[in-house]
Length: 138
Length: 322
Ligand SMILES: Nc1nc2c(ncn2[C@@H]2O[C@H](COP(=O)(O)OP(=O)(O)OP(=O)(O)O)[C@@H](O)[C@H]2O)c(=O)[nH]1
Ligand SMILES: [Mg+2]
Image (cartoon, rainbow over all chains, first blue to last red; front, side, top):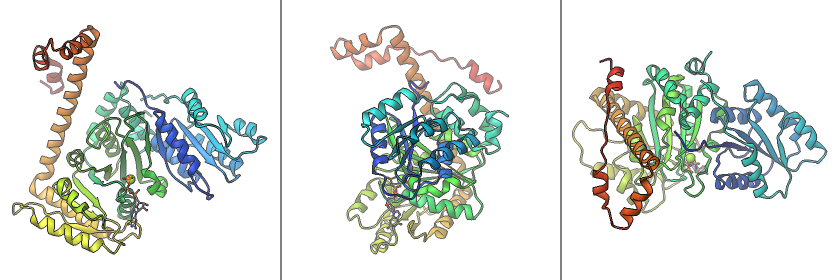
């Protein structure tokens, strides 16, 4: 048997805007903390993110968002994940998100939001605490 | 419906869960693999290797789209190395295959090597079997080639494709060293670059210099541009020619039998070794033994030879129907 079960995390950047520097930095920090990170690059559609999460059987999805579309992206993503049976995958995010929106996003099912300036250690620590390998059954 | 039935029907979520089970070596893996085993062996396995950045993922993306046009279902296993320091990994091959995610007839799995040498992940074969059982016609395995580590992909794949790129100067020398022997097909990618034709010529010359028997396969060199989507019909023709060659000469069977042997021996080594080690550890001998060898009180080979292993094949004979 394997000594430890690896945690798999999808880091994705939806939408058409900008660069993926932030997402890459987070992906690297997570790798250096021992996680397996599926990194899919820029311009992901929500459907692509859902399908990737499903095929890669990830335990969590980290979304990087700058475009201001967060109030659309997160709830839609969570809804579509439910539709394909991925209710137990943890969703977290980071980016420029107004403070007022954070409670609404959490209500929609986003587990945590990291604002710009959050240290990588904080993010990694949070992931370590909150993301565990999902259960399996035959 | 159980996981196995769903996966045999091609259900992707079930397949993904099954792959996790085998990858993490959950206890359920054994039953799972036994249940699907009768439904495997049909898919044709392509191995794709080559230096970092050669365009393997981009090439696989295009190749897959062409195979899909011909109505084949395609499973892709993209392998990247784990960090030796943290054990973590960044699996980034999907960046080049984004729109395949939404294709019903495609399934992509990223795997980290998790300390396994030889370029493949330990679970590669089990994951390929799951793809096979879920109905994929082709399984394409991507692995980075460093010059020495490609041997494993050759054993796993029916056809091994080596991707090279033009204009790396003495890179051709590096190719000569390790890769020439393993390629069934050479792909010169980035064929949109002006130096590509020279690389094709150089490679063909080198291939001619290799001595081979009359009926032996001579690897074709196919120029493609993954970026501009050219050359793929010729590549697919070459793949089918190689497949036909293997089948006509009986090499298809013998190669797959060799693979079974390889897997059997590999797993056996793994099991026997880890059983022995954990036995030594449980009885508290392990650390003492290492200390003693280190202190030159006990010699290594003498220590190994003094271990008695008792094998019991009775259960195996039951499996074989004896
Ligand atoms: N000009 C040109 N560039 C290409 C072509 N195919 C791929 N590239 C570029 O080469 C770079 C590497 O492509 P990948 O497909 O990621 O290469 P890879 O071999 O899978 O890389 P690793 O998995 O990191 O080893 C990317 O920037 C591609 O856009 C091509 O046919 N022509
Ligand atoms: Mg790649």
